[in-house]
Amino acid sequence: MKLAQLTAFAAALAISSVALAEGGGDRTFERMMTNNDRSMELFVAKEKAAGNPVVVNDKKDETTRDL
Image (tube, rainbow, N blue to C red; front, side, top):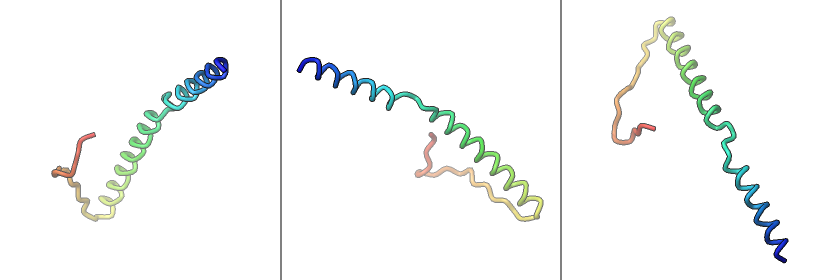
């Protein structure tokens, strides 16, 4: 019985370490934000070329939070 408990504990520890390990989420988030910034730059450039006004809202209110 003690061997079964030790094996179960080792398995739970191994599974939790895999689940909590960094899986590249930071890199994925950084790549997503870079792609978003690039697409916004392209959109603004396209809108300016078409002669349409581009509205940029930098105003922050009580619902806007810095991350």
